[in-house]
Length: 372
Image 1 (cartoon, rainbow, N blue to C red):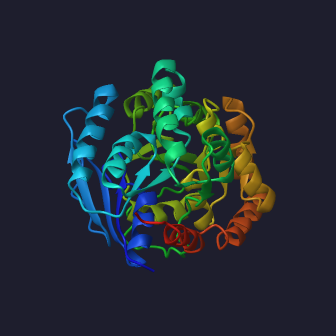
Image 2: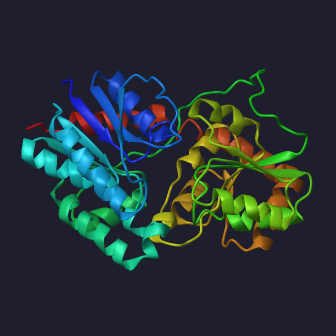
Image 3: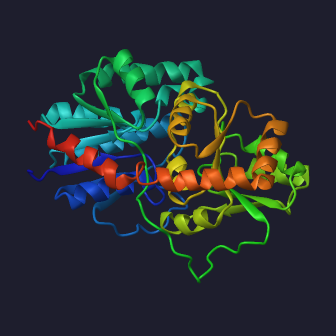
């Protein structure tokens, strides 16, 4: 296979982006020269060396319309003066700059749709903003020949909406057994841990989950991540008087997540139906929990229904009422036979849903690119 110079563009600071670390590592292992481009944040840590190169762009603005405008302008000029064969644009917020540069230089663009960007909760509730992003999508995606996304539901939607073929490359983790680590990075108490890993953002069901802890005994809720709701959720914990039941871990490095996940009792992925992006989502934490042999709570949404029909690895919730969450928590705490069945099914499903299988599709996808 011919080696290519590939630039992949995201809008985060690279450190915690497990998905792109996996993708770029696999492409580098396949012999490609890969550069992952992101941005510098006020609290960014030093770049962790990887098998691929990394570049952060520094912006004056870090949120709102001016940020997206500035970042794409900076990304445009950065890419304009780079030598490359392919730019892989991850989501709509980096697609426009790469589209224009690739047209100017006659190079190949790949679109990686990590989510249904115009249907995320932060966009759905703002019609004018949603309209702008949809215009960006309609202007670019139909003209890009090489696209992929994370699940079948989104691929079907995008193909119908933009008349572009989308392949499916799922956002799964490596197939590996995590050994108990005597370093005890995480101080586990004797009570069982319900683990949420990911951004503390709108639409993740976190408020209801925290409130539900009022009716749960002998268990703790651990939140691994930070986000727009970080301070508000900490205040909510105080208001609900569940300080002894909820623990904020802050940002956790990807290399430390497997140990944390394996030692938890249940994994959480409770999304509010606040837009089609969440409804048709297939979050990477789904597979992180699965690889750790960890039963989970998911919403009764299409992609989770498909997995559970094949391998029953989770309880699926129909709503996010506090009582519903409490019933699910208490059921897993009290029904040992159910828990063991879910745990065993996770172990059976793990070899099927792993990056070692999915990366073969990624490499084949890039082998099919026709370079200009």
